[in-house]
Length: 205
Image 1 (cartoon, one colour):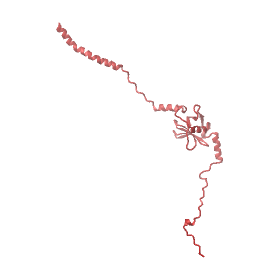
Image 2 (image 1 turned 120 degrees about the horizontal axis):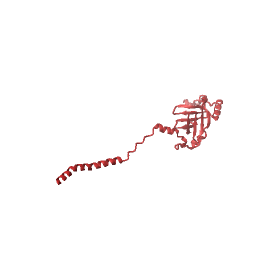
Image 3 (image 1 turned 30 degrees about the horizontal axis):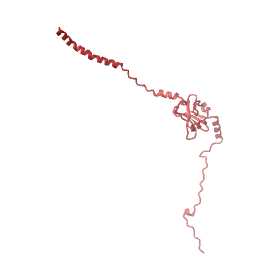
Image 4 (image 1 turned 90 degrees about the vertical axis):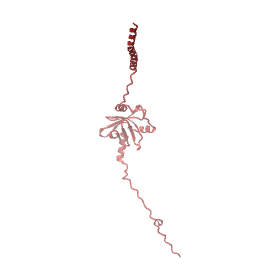
């Protein structure tokens, strides 16, 4: 009887050993499945979407736009209101209600948020860097240009003050460089020192 019991234990030993070794494997698998899932990679914002957001954000709300004292002086000289242009076009310039020195420049099909920029020529210059547009105000006319498109959106625009200047220039045009008198250069008569001629000697008495 003892021999039969001992033989049964010997035969059951491999099965017990196999069950003990299988338990850690099952526990490891359960622990692995309990780990939190790895975070999904962030999808980058498309450039077109970022550009669209930038284009609809008014420059009035852009803290990066800093106006100097010179810019504010330029802003005081900007003609505002409805300004008639050639071919029946018009441009409306409205000062910003949020920040002094900034302007809303509108046509029938476009609108730009502009701020003054110092000009090398002394002209009044407003720019919208995001849209690539510029408003150039001269003494007798103004124009709206798209540097991005490489064309003028409105030309020969005149406020009442510019109309007066243009009329005055028609009556009294500024002299052209070609019309300026050429100064005459008068050459002095050559002296004996210049010619090298000897002074004649006086006869002795």
